[in-house]
Image 1 (cartoon, rainbow, N blue to C red):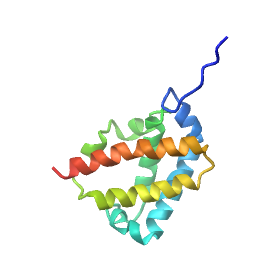
Image 2 (image 1 turned 45 degrees about the vertical axis):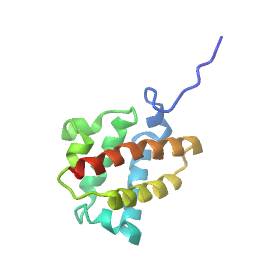
Image 3 (image 1 turned 90 degrees about the vertical axis):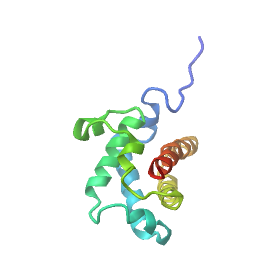
Image 4 (image 1 turned 180 degrees about the vertical axis):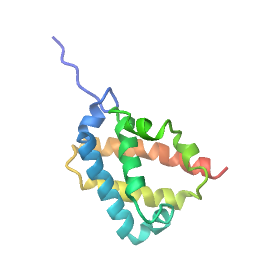
Length: 137
């Protein structure tokens, strides 16, 4: 009998690899701590409100469904198109790079498998790029 190797992006494997909702909350908390403390992240941090509880919850809930877990974001906030949801903001390559830097550092601090860390950052780069394009129109 051949054993199937599970792949990130299949079913809820990525969600499980991230530690499910508690792991995503930890990731997002670390991300926003970095956003608040890294000087090179200021241009991205300025896009968020002073109080981060709303954006923090939204990001964790979004990541849940995006990684194959429960679609919590949709339950609370409705459907989302990532590029369209950010179109009203002035997000250029500098802001995107700062956001990705914080996420890269936050992912590095998690107890995730190294292969999942690489996968996650690569996947997050896709919507980050699409947001830059949507905001430049």
